[in-house]
Length: 195
Image (cartoon, rainbow, N blue to C red; front, top):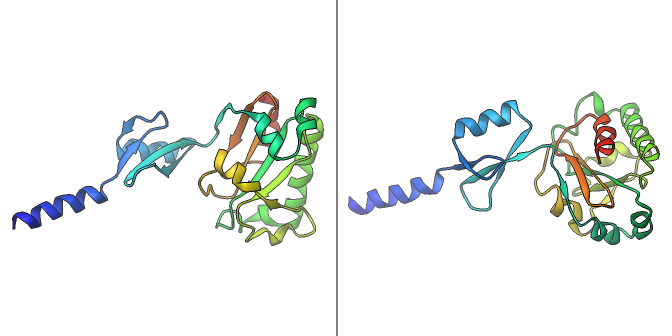
């Protein structure tokens, strides 16, 4: 009987969850879920089993941009001070495979809008990277996507499968702004303006 109680307690601890807010401080399940439902957050697995943490959907920050430009073979753009626009496709999901935003007309419209933003801010031509190409057939004849080089953007900005797709804009000075998951295409313009 004693061993049964100990095994029960060990197994119960193994299935319990611990929640952390966006600042890395422990929080309640209720607060965690409320922020996901009513704020710009995703809940993602933490580094340890049984840990969930909040991630802000619109991260901003500083990185060593020179390394990214070099890995992409864009040293001249780096020297010229031209920002990067990277659109990231995680792979097919319910969000990016249904709805009115997936018609050829709307896809063409979005690709043209991103090209206009690129010209407006003298950015490098937009880069379209994927983690998994399944579902990109809808872009045939509209836009070519390429594999994320060595997982560069997945590792730096998109470590989880955020629904629909994501983007990041990066200045040569290292400032970046991103939206994780579904976003209106006009937010790329807003992010570039704020770099």
